[in-house]
Image 1: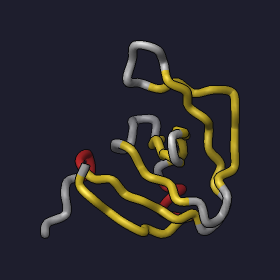
Image 2: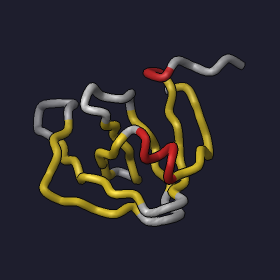
Image 3: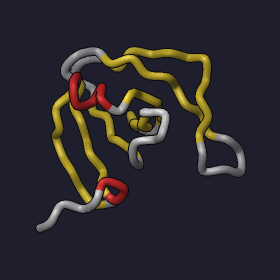
Image 4: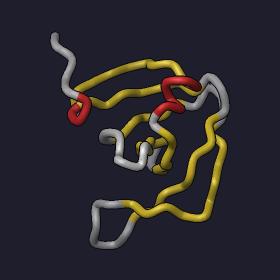
Length: 88
């Protein structure tokens, strides 16, 4: 089965080293999320799901359950291992 293009794939990662992230919040009436002033550390062992593709800022959105966070694109590749890739 061919791998879907990046904008159509969902990649799941298991964090292997703590990962800094900015909490995002929903905006009423919009699909876009906005950053908050809350910085968190995603702990080792947490499963995150990359949502969408890399933004021009170099950031991506990752989901942990129902919570959304913004992280640098390279961080999951350097601080996590892929546990699954599926088409969206």
